Amino acid sequence: MATVTSHYAREALPGAARKGLDVDQLLVDAGISQELIDAADSRVHTEQLTRLIQSIWVLLDDEFMGYTSHRAKLGTFGMMCQLVSRCETIDALFNRGIKYYSFVTEDIVMDYREVETGREFIVTMAEPALDPVHFYQEFWIVIWHRFASWIIGQQIKLQAAYFAYPEPAHSAEFKFQFACPCFFNADKTKICFSNQYASLAPVRTQRELAQFLKRQPAGVLTIPGDDSSLTLRIKVALINDAETLNSFPEFDDLAATLHISSPTLRRKLKDEGTSYQKIKDSVRCDIAIEKISVQQMAVNDVAQLLGFAEPRSFTRAFKQWTGVTPSVYRRK
Image 1 (cartoon, rainbow, N blue to C red):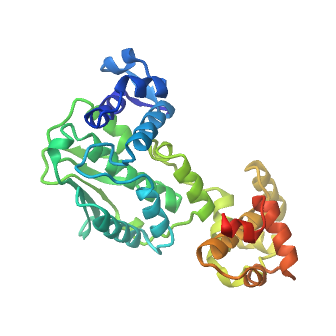
Image 2: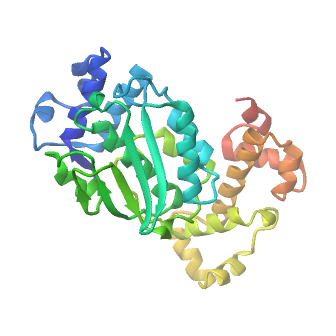
């Protein structure tokens, strides 16, 4: 979906206005006309809404966009994503992410529960009066749902969504935002999904996560589709089999594992704009970056882990991947 109702652009502004930002200038910078904002049934492009939200984030240094008593400084959500990206399951991701935010703020209270029908993610605003039309509460639920879906490579299909307020005028948009039965005047605002997703593991690499965060909120304004590409399947298999990083399977063996003939696999990867060698290099690069910059592993040890005969060969490859040597990358 390339457009969303102008309601979201319109209601992104009051929090910023309360904090003293020039709303007219925000709209100009985002490329959104006042006529578009004033028309109740109009729609804005997700790129325009992305620019608007990014401007508010930066100018306020507040990812909560002025809808809470206290700021969530720019980068708070990104730090949470980094923290949970290595969780083994969606259950662990939600629980760890919520615990992180419990240390950061008391303005948004979250809960994640196992119930008989599946899982529930509950969001409560500590001061609802600061978010009178529930703009940010809805946005926050969408952010978590889309991020969780993206990181496991498939859409988490919701069973139901409940809202602790009357049905709003823009509820027609909910069929796009939540794609499930929606109920209003509920006890709590929450989304519900099946147990089948609870044990799924994140499949995205650190480099993919960095790109995802760089584009925010563009990545959460549309519902991610299921990523069933061969590229992702192969990447996940290589990453998960950490013991064989220095000896990836031969191409023919990989094809047999995937129950595909070698020529067919080569053709399908070409159709996806890649090759087995590119996938292996991508996996090695992502793992090298994590080992060097996050785990502070010695370059010689990383080279050996990734199957390079000598550190110099690894350094040359790393520079081809990133543009700089491992030591320069670590410093930067």
